[in-house]
Image (cartoon, rainbow, N blue to C red):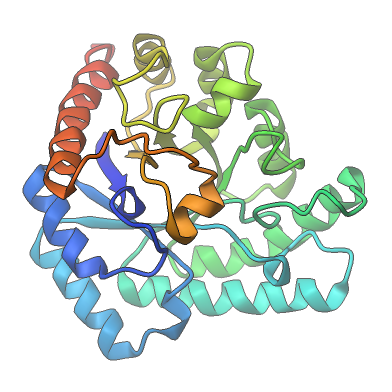
Length: 293
């Protein structure tokens, strides 16, 4: 497995100096830095090349996360919005190719966060989304990018809430580079068994986010990590594992993620670094010690 962390663990705004975090996570011992897609459409070719060179120079693999806006909703009943969303992903995927990024994950099949004041048409949105994702998947494949669809809890989305729904959706899309993405935070809310959910995803699992039930780093809460490690071993998972902790209130990140108290206990950047490094050591041990010989 390759282990990573989402840059926004340290940030209160989505826009950040990714090169700074590449160098930081390399020093902490991570393999992967996950960055946000939202600023990438505004990057020049020079900026893309500089970011790629920084990642390569530090031995860091970049993955990308994205919470699509309502205007980027591939499931929208409005054909103009779906057309706009397809154009957005086409451009973004070409940029990921230039950046040497081979994985994007998130609620790519819908938008985030959901506006629940609007009428929900799960069946219609599902059908439109499958058709749209199938079309975008062709571009992703040409760009060498895995398109990983994140299973989210009911408060953040309604289309795909369980691993079984994720597998059903991916099977309907029927494209090799469209995969299921699981997250321990969301599984803790929706699944009867977290290990069972991972086994349900099986060979369709393309990306895994980790974190505690209150968004702390792995190992600081009550998520059943041994069970998760055993399930990953059972399905032979050897892909990316990216922790996605959010522990600081304030700013756009704190507001979007709904962090209303200081979960970090007043940690400064150095303390956050130490917590991340300890969580990395914990994750490498507990998630990989169950590998079948």
